[in-house]
Length: 229
Ligand code: SF4
Image (cartoon, rainbow, N blue to C red; front, side, top):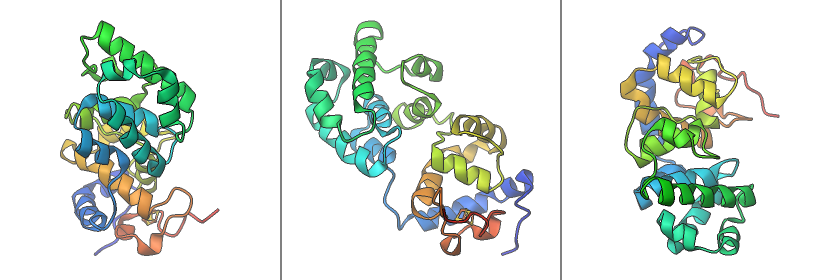
């Protein structure tokens, strides 16, 4: 396989179909990231929204079990509203900022039940209008909850890898989402999130990427460049 000119985003993106193919093969050995796991288990936009809120600034390995326990107790906004705050906080205590998250969850449930006919907003703007919901949560809810693949959810892994690969030059995940949606052919949007999250969780770690074990290293301009802390 020839080395692509990874410093040139256009050249790098020309290889995207090959990169996706390689990553699809690579990730078969990995576990699914928490959001797609929960999507598979729950299949409602509300549960995807809640699991994503829980996952903010929290390790996936912590979020998964907490979300599962929570959904055993309640699955709809109405059921969440009936749950006493103390009980909600006790269940979600392992996730970071659990107190703030519990307040946001209750506020969101109240809005959905009282002002939105019990339905999770099904537009990006509608979701962004909810307190505590940012671009990443809105995009994940649209794509995995409402099954509207018009967005690329970008978490820290997608952001870091997209910059290392030279597809974008951005400072944060929100900018990366905007830029990726400009430069990536739409047919790859759905795959991109899951594949890059898994690649980031298992190989291209934020601090110390395992370049020697990376299946797409021949396409990466940063191979061997990012050192361990
Ligand atoms: S070569 Fe290294 S930096 Fe580049 S994608 Fe692979 S693990 Fe990440």
